[in-house]
Image (cartoon, rainbow over the protein chains, first blue to last red):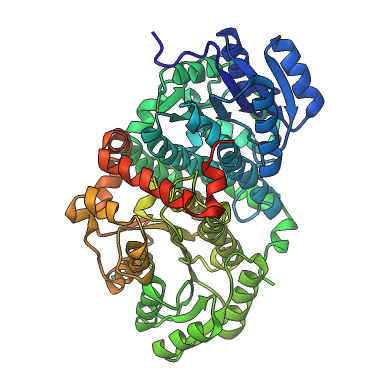
Length: 288
Length: 291
């Protein structure tokens, strides 16, 4: 018996044209919710809404722009009468797998802009509705909030910020009868992950990562974990589930893992190759 | 016998006109390092450098400006011949104790800009030197990185994020013989902390936290912990030290304390008060009022 029933509720989900966002929208809709799908690609998000069926609208919007999210919120409220559930899901993977030193700075900052400030804008825009209607907010973090962010630091930095964000938000919403949850995913078979793994610059990392961590779950499984979390107003959802245990013991595991990584010749070689492989670019980051 | 001897090294510290940054600069200098004291205000940075003595220069630079940080590093290199140690310390406490719903957006974003992007710009400007000279970087996070950020979320968010920069950096620097630390401080008796406790609504902190958590250490103690961490190229620096154990258990304690916070009527009252303060302020009221 869910403590929070999606039937008859209104949900807004960012980054919902595909992947985990789409699947969560689809499954909430299946349980009787009306859904507003937000994405940067207007055509794609409207098609996604159409595939879901009635009580679903697609809205073009950019989470890096507070005004754009506010407009999407206003449109959703106008169409469905309010918002009960929001999922700040939109995110990108860093376009290049490289070190903090070598990464093009606009790439690094863009990941923070979308994955961290995008969550802030989304939450800020929906909060008046969620608080008033005693709803629930899901912020999408990642196993990277827990794991070492080597060669992927912007992503780990942003997702760790999102985790702290969701925890604070939950406490602040409690006196109002509303709630928030942090969603942690390992690798999910989405376009974001497929694209990242198809790139040559990630092949070394895949070789050295433990294979249990590399196993991918489907977007449908990831969406189901979020929906269950909403129904339970859960503070945390993990998919795959074993990340719950890694999270619980992170304070002990992380220092050990970090030390092992520092001493693992394969990791170090992958990092060295990343920097030297960038060739002439290395010079361009030298202090002027 | 330190693993990494500061004597003869060159160090750059941001937010170094006062507090932990100043103390760390002073103590590195006492061990024979040349130091660049970076802070927003040229006069304050210059005066702080003067108080430290010879081999110390003051540089005015804003950590939110990548170009200014590159220029600060360039000036340090020109003056002292290189850069071995960088400490990304400049930070800001939230100007008001408020919820995410009631905080003025520009205040929230400013804290993230200084505490997170400021670290990024500092690290980014220093990295070529640090990597080349097999040096060391200190990223100043906070025990806030694993605490619940209610009523001050911009700080916890930015410090949790800064922690991840430091961890990734350390691993990425290892193949080049360089290293990085994440520094976690509890309450240190700095101007930032003193001002935080003077703000409306701050009383709840003292009310709900156990006394031992609220005990403040001095800036010299915090600086000494950092210097020791640099000498040992330590991955993590905790001051007070017992935060190390809370950090080790964070994955278990965090969820338990979060649940307790949700059910604590004193915290609920503080959150309601914070939102009420905001609604009496016309600028913030718009975001609290339902649309």
